[in-house]
Image (cartoon, rainbow, N blue to C red; front, side, top):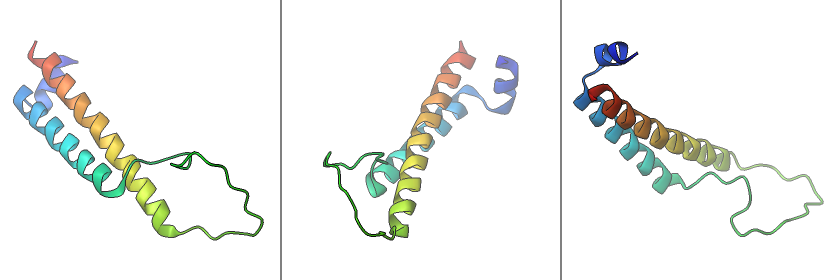
Length: 86
């Protein structure tokens, strides 16, 4: 497994890729916010009429999840870099 990962990129390249992915992920999270499955204020609301969803909320939520995934992927790349170089 180490040989395959080393053939793909060198350890410094894995580190640089990890840092770049983490930076882009953080940028997306700061720009679009954390994706919430609950309302941020913690209150429950009962809606008696059909409410239309704002499509921008969906876009912001998806971009927030992508940012979070990029942070995890960047951390994974840095761990791979350490593991391959050892």
